[in-house]
Image (cartoon, rainbow, N blue to C red; front, side):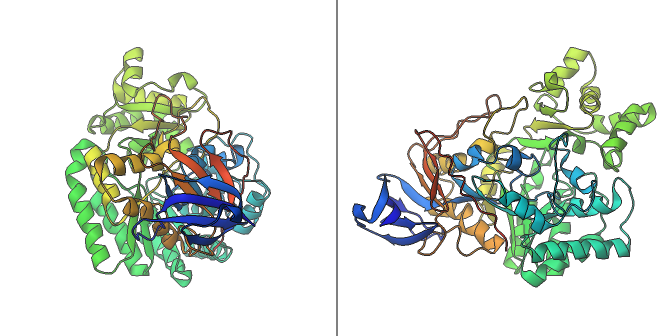
Amino acid sequence: MKDILIQNGTVIDGIAKAAYKADVLIDKNKIVEITPNISEKSAKKVIDATDKYVTPGFIDIQNHSDSYWTIFDQPDQLSLVSQGITTIVMGNCGSSLAPIFNQEAIKTVQKWHSLTGVNVNWATFEEFCKALEQIKIGVNVASLIGHATLRRGLLGDQVRNITPGELKVMGKLLNQSLDEGALGLSLGLVYAHEVDSTQTELEELAKNLKRQDKYLSIHLRNEGAEILDAVDEALHIAQKCEIKLKISHLKVREKQNWHLFEHVMNKLENAFHQGSDVSYDAYPYSTSWSVLYTYLPRWAYEGGRDAILAKLSNQTERRKILDFLRNQQYDYNSMRVATAKDNPTLVGKTIGQIAENQGVSKEDAMLTVLAASKGQAIVFDRNVSTEQMELLISSPLAIVATDGAGYTHESADLVHPRCFGSMPKLLKLVREKKLLTWEQAIKKITSEPARLMGLKSRGVLKPEAFADVVVFDPATVLDLADYDQPYQIAKGITTTIVNGEIAYSEGEAKTQALAGEIIRR
């Protein structure tokens, strides 16, 4: 007798074949049969999927459960499994939790999470994986290697070019991590410790990926007025090194730049049609979740947090920063503080409200928030066109991801609702706006990210594949999380199975199966 039978459902296998009626039989951690009319007597547990879709578990290829530290603090990752996510890829936007060869390297995550009380007892990527295996996790976990993690481990807060010798060390550490199972390399070119990276440095590191056919993930150097140059830079690196490219959370920020959207898409589509393996991920929201210091001029945050605070306290440099900000067109009334280190009274307020309360300009208020939070502030910013967001997720080049983290319990901070609702919101858009077929939408969150990751037995429903499975009701699936109450579980995801264990069941007490595995490739 097998373990689980999912009966009477409509199967969407993740490969974009037309949906079909079939039962799915699971034994241990594998799918053993997909066919109509499997006897109930075949399995110990039967799940009735009448009027529901049965699909592969969703893969979140752009995840930050590591940089927000919830992979350790909240390992059941309820906000993810409750929206059907069974596998996540961490180490994005230039920051990973390995390799950590000195105390400076781990500091790349402090823009997202305080390092107070954090204990790191690993150095290499393999040791990091073993540390994760010591805790039980609700989802499967894979990781990229962060460029800033490598770079900061060597330079600390120094602002200078990497030497040839240091670049060889970075390449050696990257190759060791790739050999130990990391999926590729990530860049976060907007952030303080990567903003001055040269083209030579980036190409020398990226070319190491070709040997194992692993991919490069890039947070573009600019998502606003200079986005076309940033896209060109990303495409040039990938084409020169002959590697797979994924652009992280693609969008065009700020209304005055939205006219560039068509040009961005033309560049990417032309590259794809000319043979480049290029894709991007996007989330189905028009509000970003952004590190506040990245709104400053680049020179103001070179060298990291201490350098930012020093410039803010220097009246001459503060005035120069204010002059820059006054020439921008940021919508401060929609820029809402989500996280402010040691200053919870700022959370939930917009920069505009803070300016009014303090009787200062909005630009001054932004700098006050940065100084009061010791440079560690994150904001919600409604800066993306809803129409363009829908076009982004509809493109054949798109993978849909959360760009969020897994949460189980509330904190004093606000989190982006995408942490709880990205996949249900995508499915709701399919139902209500017909942006994609059901088969196309499922492929974007299953087999397409699995292909980029180099995985053949996840992201699909077929015999011998891992039993990561989602059952959802296409008529009722719905995201409930919003910016005021983000910790809201979605509706309509009725069952999530991770490696053959029921990780989530709607309407019942959540299980504690915690059957996630560490994925090395």
